[in-house]
Length: 231
Image (cartoon, rainbow, N blue to C red; front, side, top):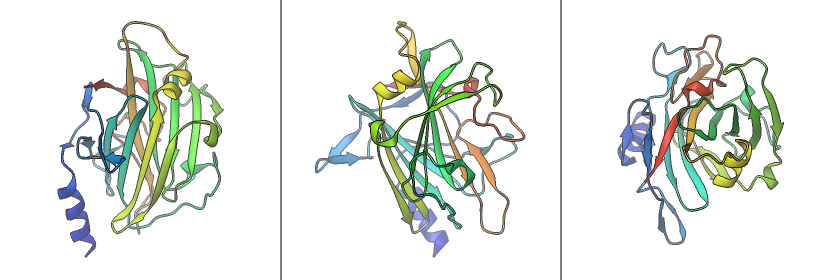
């Protein structure tokens, strides 16, 4: 039954980009009954472990679209062993099962130094931080927590048959603010996405949309952020 649920999830997704794509094309979200419809979203999967040594056991299907105000992401997370004890904003969600997205608004030819970190737990708890990272590594990082209620992010998550699913609507204005409100004409939005997960009877996995070749794992490598092309 679980295998059938996974197959149905895969078949239900309209577009799957199986590998990292720099300059990923995303499109305006469609609506249905006043709510976001994901029929026009770009969906990526095949998250790899951070060391770039293969695919994660429990995969992530991340669908992305946008409107005039928000970048919208839906994460469908295959998970046979959901673990997350947290229930308050900005707790250490990264110590348990979590979906993470890092976003920057910066010059197309530069490595981001300032960016936004957003994490979502399987039970709908949020973590938001503005990050300063001058070394393109997990060394010398400074972060400034953002109150979840003041962030403007719309979010929800919960268990589903094959694991858990979550949605994030992140204001473009928040991404720009975390990035230092750059004013250059060559600026683009950049991102990377991550999962932390413990498969049943397995070892903890740290997986990425764009594997950053780190071991031990480090998600804070903005040179591996990929650009978004808003169409």
